[in-house]
Picture (cartoon, rainbow, N blue to C red):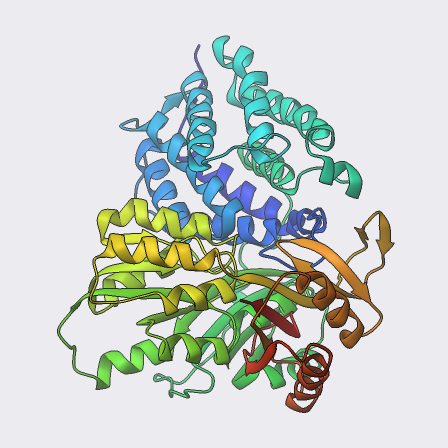
Length: 531
């Protein structure tokens, strides 16, 4: 008798995968070789899968095909970062393979997962060996025999996990940076966790937080949120298996915003806060336990929708991503119609770009991602919106600012994309931050806690203090001709200290104009732009 896989089975697999990620996402994050939090793979895949799990759990559909379609749609809209977008494409391929089916044979589901691998490959313009795609390819090849033999789907998953583990173990030999750091690929590990979680869910052996936690935890909130322009993001989430007492969590969260409300249960903490930096709040809370039911609303948008009449739409505008109030204000002044909050540790989902376009006041948009880990999400939005959107692939905020300087709303979108793309090629950008894990610089070990100078995700310099790291970085960047050096100081650097560093840099390089701006970014005390 041929085994049939039902919609109920699919629900259990998704729930199992999500539970597995709640347990494992921090370990996956630890495999990232870059020594700065940077849209970490585990967190992005967790948040993407969370959108899928909530949608499938609430879905009225019973058939496996309609459920897979709903999962794919939720994954695409909720995709965060490059790893989240790739995961969303796996869901899209699965949905194609199961389209129109109320239930499916194990062989049909196995083939659907192989479709998922194909779609994941298509999502990346230049696949690199030693990444999640190599592991996905290994899984597809390794599971081919069990699919052909129509074995039970649990056996197919077991074979897929075993094949994926073999492929994962080869990634350090395929990608030198992994071998140097002594780790396997984080995205590939995430894919194995996903499949292993699906198996746990199917067999009913997964371990995770209690399913009925929300019955024991209630939080009464006012019916109407008050709008505060200084803290426009209403941020709510649950921390399960919370390692922190409520009073300690309150002490840490108080500086992050206002309207703070905490509800404590049995190893569970529910958080409500109005903040200017929801990403920083979530990143902090990730160290306390596992995050669930994350909800972020922009109250400023809600407020504007109520009190401001809708103007006539303009032909063309810019949507840009920024981390920090200073950068957001600059971009608005330079002509950006909409600024989406996001950056290193909080990559915005595809849905944010979709909502911005649908709610915006322009016929067509140019998107500036301003982060290498956000480009795939922006491109996914373009796929969904068609020629209403174009993407200029800015990989950092200085490039985004340069692109805005070249924007002219009176010109055609193609002319603007060309001019803005040319403009970003003239910018050299760098940053100074603190290493959160050990790394290698010119073959020398740089321990965690040292200040490091970073260019294009490569650590070039280090120093015991911020000034030393900055000056070492400037020596490498200013070996070629430059006219202007712009310093953007972050939210944790005092203005007096920033002014002192700018003055010292100006004194050393008196032939270059040094300009200082308040960027307000997290993680990086200083970002540098050279033109």
